Image (cartoon, rainbow, N blue to C red):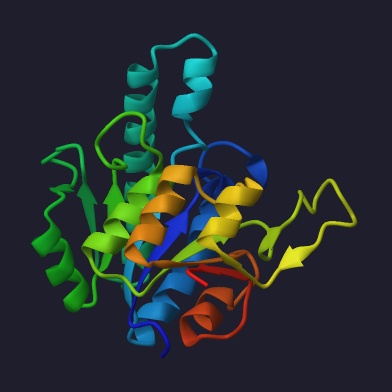
Length: 236
């Protein structure tokens, strides 16, 4: 195994599947099966999920809503997604804990770093919900923060495409894929992998990011094994 402990970043849109919004049970089922394989391989798995399939804070603010209020709604959306993923994982025998930055004692455990690390050591999947618990910070930044706190070996950013391109490969047939990039390249080129705060945080703490297509069966395991899948963002 190349990576013993990973932080898997899932977008809320990924949970929506082909529907675009809401939660797709078939997508959750397939993702859960892939995550179970990681646990069976001996990998310690932390997960951060976005909430864009339900509510996106920036979009709400753009439409006139107070940004703080909109971001709080987005954080609640991540908790809904986290509980849904937990349910599907536990149905297939994967021990799971949801730790949330916003206290909801009747629903999930409060986020405590030592508790999170202990759960990981016991081979439980830890789902970090509620973002950072603060408005104006994205779940990308939450992923970078949690990865640093739990001393993850890598951030695996799951997307709908097979890596990072110089432009949108869906809209442009001549888009060129990068096999690797430095943090500075991502910032200077304005590549929308993660927001600039998250990229800077990863750069300062030397956390590699691998961007890959999560919907191709087996890719999650291949990344954990160190196969050259997708695009890696690193310090050099």
